[in-house]
Length: 407
Image (cartoon, rainbow, N blue to C red; front, side, top):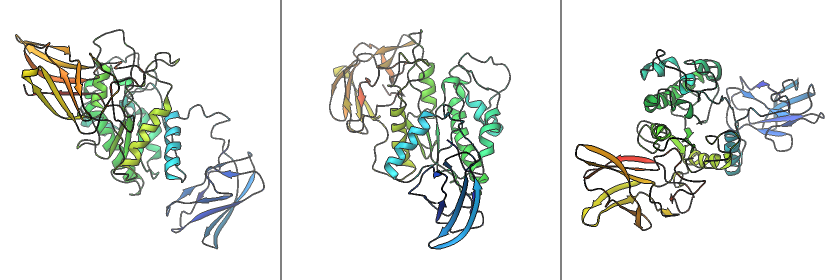
């Protein structure tokens, strides 16, 4: 596949369509016959397509029936050299799901590098705001790519700042499990804010100041340590320690929960599940709701909005913000912090009775004070799509959470 990159319409405020005539087998990347419709008034447009390398192509710009400009050019740049293995699968599938809904072309720009920490994608400004130090740390084995502060921001994000973006999707976090993990609840929101500001300024205001920003919450990973909660902490920090988005610290954001998509037999390691389709599908629901204004669309799973201790029954009652579907009973996925004799420990709280929007947990094993409750707080919370709680109509899993309770 090849691409034609021609800057057109730089001084034309009302370019409505580009009409291509060529006998060399060239086609636009998204087209109707040999027409490509520009979706809005551009400050500039780049036309992408595929065809025979070095073929001569005539591009005609039209407003209604009037020809504004005609340019003869050549197919000159081969983007993939016959292979697009570097393209993010989640990004491509996300775009396909959006296209199926929107029914107009969606442009995708993939700028990614696996095994890299958030510090590499952050500007010096945002790292300074979170007090991230360059000194005194050893790179963990989870980092396999560039890790220097701001190196990928400078090389792979800053050159794109003049582009007009509709939104961003982000899939990262495992490289910070052992690197500045406790700062991720600052570095991630700070990166989002910094990218928004710089893309807005770099595009001369064409990129929205609060452009939509979606992300994938970390999937399940196999761990040798039974009490390993490092991945749980990163998942929590990805939401600025609130468990859901959008929120006050992360406005205009959306999240795809992936903790139920663990892949024990993935040839790339369990942290890289092969089911990218479900990840992309859940992401695109958030984009439709947050970026494209489908206000009634359910795009995230249920979270409890009220927790009440029924001391006489030895139960903890949870009332959810949405309807819930209990897919199976689980005796270990809910845990309570039980405190007494100046110490606290986490104990399982088996699921008891439930209704369409409420769930009761058995806490009779705690003779002392129940000070906290957490759900799915594990590296591997459940098997593939087998977590106990989902939204009944959307198959979206209830996200993990931790909350402190009043005894």
